[in-house]
Length: 366
Image 1 (tube, rainbow, N blue to C red):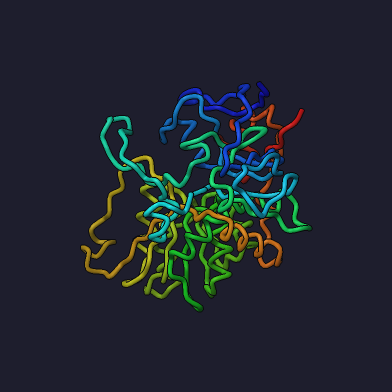
Image 2: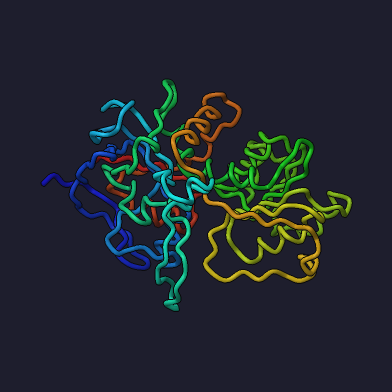
C-alpha cells in the first residue's frame, strides 16, 4: 500500500505529521497531488479543541495541486492538469445546494460540543479537514470532482491562487452579504487574512469609504494597500466613537465582523446605521450576546447575515479571474514558507501570530 505524509489532529493542542495510505479513487473523485497549501484560522480552532473533528483526521482545506488520478465518471479534466478545489466541496445534489446554500450541503443531526448537546452541524459542505481527510498532506481526494475542480489559468502561480479556496471566497462573501452599494461607507473589524480579503471585496463592490479596525499596525498598513481609506488601531482610540465621528453620527451602511469575538461583534453592531447590515464571518467559540441599545431593542431594521465561503468550480473560476485581472493583489498575504515536514513548527508560528505572519505557504517535499 502506497503511503503519504499528512498533518493529523491528535487531540487538543496537538496536530502532528503522520504516515497515511494514499486514498483510493472512486468514480466521482479525483486524487490531487498537493503542490501548495496553507493553514487557516479555522485550523487553529480545531487545534485548540474549540471545533470538534475526529482524532486522526487530516487537517486543511485549501488545496492547490495537480490531478494525479481521475475517477471514471469525471470528464473534462486531464491527469497532470493544475487545479484548485474550494474549501467547500458540495455535491450540488442536496436540498441545501439546490436551495442556494451549497455550503450547507449535507448538514445533519449530531451530538457535539463540550456539553454533549444535540444540534444540527451546519457547514457540512465543508468536508476537507472537517468530515473527510484534508489538504495538509501530499495528496488529497476531492469528492464530486466534476463540480469542484477548477483549472488554474496559465500564467498564475500557486501562491497567486492559494487564497481562492477559502479566505478570498470567504472575505468576498462577507462583502457580498453586507449588501454594499456604490458610495457606501463600510467598516471592517479585524484585518487578518479574511478581513483583508473583505476590504478588497468591499472596494470591488463600490464602497467609497472603507474603515478598517485592528490592533496590529502592520495589518492596518496592508489594509490600506487592499483598499482601506481609514485604518483605526483599537489600542489607540475608541473605535466606536471614532467611526461615529467619521460618519457624522449617521453610522456605517455596512459593518463586517471578521474575527469571531463578542467585542468585535458588538462594535460592528454599535456603528451600524438604522437599516444597515452586519455581515458576520467570525467562527465563534462561545455564545454571542446582542446588546439591547445597539440592537435598538429589535426595532432598528438591522440585518445580520452569516456566511460560509461558497465553493464549486464556478466560484473558483470567478475568483481566479479577479486575480488574473490584477484588480486585487493578494501576494502580500503570503508572509512565510514551510515544508510539509515542518508543519508543526508552522502551526506554532501561525497559532501564536509571531513574526508578522499572515498566511503560510506549505509545500510538500523534503
